[in-house]
Each structure stands twice: as C-alpha cells, then as structure tokens.
Image (cartoon, rainbow, N blue to C red; front, top):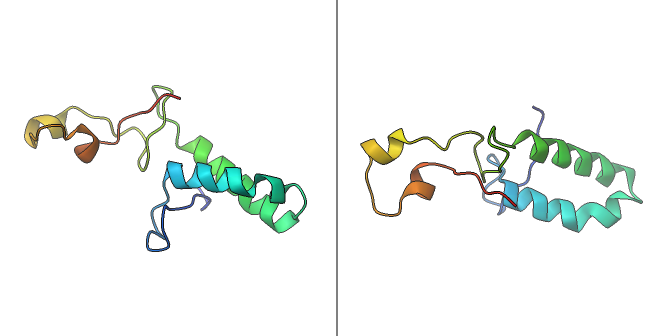
Length: 91
C-alpha cells in the first residue's frame, strides 16, 4: 500500500494512525475540492484509511487485525488489552 496516512504528531512520521488520518481528512476535505494537489493527498489518505479495516469490520488505531488473545496470556497485566493488542473499534 502506498503511503497515505498521517500520524498524530510531527514526531510520528513513519507510523500513521487511523485517528490522525481521519482527522486530517476531515480538515482537508473542503480544500481538496478546490486544490488538485490536496485532492491527491486526500485520496491517498482515504485509500489508506479504508485499507486499515479489520476482518471483523472494525478499525484499529495503528495495526490491522492484531486483536489476538495470546499477548494477554503471555504478558498478563491488568487492563492491558489496548497496550498489547490494537483492538477494533466499531463506529
């Protein structure tokens, strides 16, 4: 998949996240309608966001389809599901 997502900060330039990308898409939407270069970036962002949908239909923040049980068994920690995995959120 070609690049297309945005990270949540200027430090996070390698690993985009769904929250940062969808926020950026909402902000850039009106400008994408009148500026071709912005439109190209916006379309890449939309394609990237859609590519991040999990098999269960939900959306994770950073990694696709990583909601596994084994990290919770091998690395037990109270309330750590969102730390060890990237569970789906259904909106």
